[in-house]
Image (cartoon, rainbow, N blue to C red; front, side, top):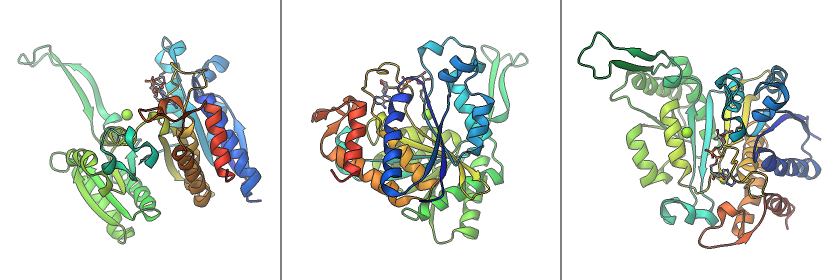
Length: 374
Ligand code: NAI
Ligand code: MG
């Protein structure tokens, strides 16, 4: 038995608890069959926490998240909570976790499983076998920079409408270096290649970005291949020849857009995992939150239609990045790949080719069977 890994599970709302139930089966399987030892606890986030405590994340839950080796979250939100005051909206629970854990590196893999290549908006030969990782800076940049706001522009009679909207892109060298380090570390475990994207041609913060990423490379990771690309060209290259990339590192704004664009290279929202990592804790593991990219999908909640693979692959990322169980992570990813190759499909994956349609729970069971060699 290994040292226990503490894992806090926050299923959240809508399909969150449905997909998380399948992850729990996977965790149990690894405990029973691979000698992994998880100390799992469950708590509430989002609308579920609001219903119980009047807040989308209780202080006590926040403290447990800070202490956990990893947090695994389902999804938050739903129509029931749309009228709530901004300060207690379900999304605020997720934002609080990200902010207080200082999760500055958002990892968004774009991986195309061969069996699903026809779901891509691009041609099969452009995306088949695609496996890239976008690292987006998550805690700074234009979404947080000051000054910001909407002001009157009364002294400027030329301005029709009389108002001005302001946001500030601000990055410190330290903020750039720490996310660059995360990207280089990840690249070392993969294809050993980092492409950094900014707009150094028109933005000073982009010049600093380029210089600091280069500095981290030259001083700490000279053996990883580093290239720089303007983010607009990066967007073109992502849809033209995505296989040229391994790890892409970019700022908060460009990362938001580029990671969503890359996601569509691979097909369904029900397939996309993510991780958000922070600084190392006393035990050397990074602060970490793992979650599927999708939301609470109220349109299909409670019907057994949700695809649990995004959440299961998020747990695979936890195995790899928090628990250093790369072999177990690969084993889980291969089980998912096998099930897809066998034609097993939740409704969101039933394309023109058809397949064997299964429910959320049946998909979980098929993945367990594939793990067990069935
Ligand atoms: P969504 O991701 O929940 O759903 C978009 C579409 O994709 C829906 O048609 C849904 O049925 C489908 N879908 C999503 N996940 C799926 C899965 N695992 N399997 C099969 N189909 C899936 O985004 P939407 O509809 O914009 O938002 C719904 C709620 O979720 C809102 O309250 C929103 O605020 C919240 N949300 C929460 C997020 C989070 O917790 N990180 C992220 C995005 C939205
Ligand atoms: Mg986005």
